[in-house]
Image 1: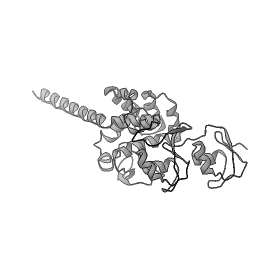
Image 2: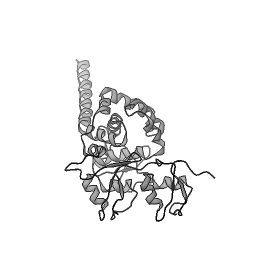
Image 3: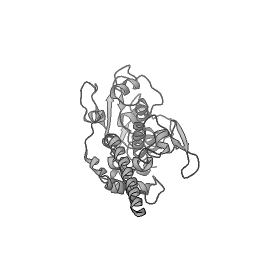
Length: 297
């Protein structure tokens, strides 16, 4: 009798845990798919990490900080924070206004860090490669991290979401469609989506029109504050790249390092590094700037 009761309790717990995971997947699968189309991170990986890192949305960080991926503050974080015991006591973690911000920051965290760059060379549906790569790159200290991610993906068929289409507004932006909700034409430069500003517009105006957060546009376009835009100015809807699509650029009159970085969709810090220039300095007319390879002496 006792054995039967114990079996029933174990079975009930397993069933309940499974249901919690399924509810989590149902709730956040659309966000994961949307992020996949924007940042080329498999939706299965995003969901598996969310489940594992947030305890299916029930961890302290998830409940009190909307942090579903265990992302710590790091030196480049200027947003809200929360302190939580992890590898050490009272470590600093990022705090978000909502879960959508956590998912977006996870995409940015992986796509903008050099140590994860090799992952984006994998096929979008190679979740096993991504899982092993995340462990290799040190996303988590757990030595079985990859196995846990792969098991979650297999147990809950999460890989099927790697083949789904996004139903969000971002997919409309990716296709450059025009409709009542998308009032701007969307273009592509250096594999980055952007829109063209009208004279007198603010970044906030474009953020509202394109249904994205202002802080996203400011980060993508390397601006610290909202400002008035010039007519014809590119406004990127995705992060700029580490290198340009051309080998070099000859500086013209009135061009600055920032305007050139916007012209080619290359991050400003990488433009400076490739040309061995001090950050904040400006080029001279006729200077040949490298956009792909670092300047050699």
